[in-house]
Image 1: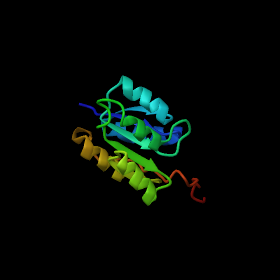
Image 2 (image 1 turned 90 degrees about the vertical axis):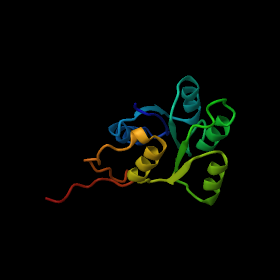
Image 3 (image 1 turned 120 degrees about the vertical axis):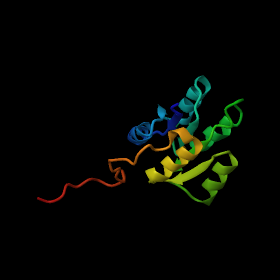
Image 4 (image 1 turned 135 degrees about the vertical axis):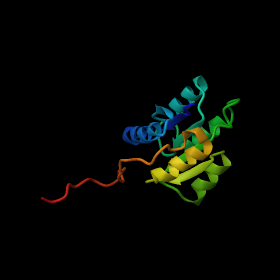
Length: 145
């Protein structure tokens, strides 16, 4: 049975790339562009894991975690927080608010896939990816000649 994952990130390209990787592993993914949209989706559908960016407009990842604590039967959903601003304070606050894991950006897709597989054993990668995901913060330059 496919695992349902909610991806909350304001960057459309990041969401799409993450969705492609996880769907390749057999997961079903739904995307939200901010924490408020994510909460709305969470109240109407069941998810096995939430992958949550922290720095977003409308509602940050930390605000999402705080509000999730007050939604009956939803506060136990494992949350994997991803952030470009990982430091001790962010890690401490996310952990206190119930995040299962906190990963800095740019993150390693292998690490993220391993955490998802740990949380959802049926979503474990069936095979290694045959494509390479480049660091999206760098520009691509074709080889000379």
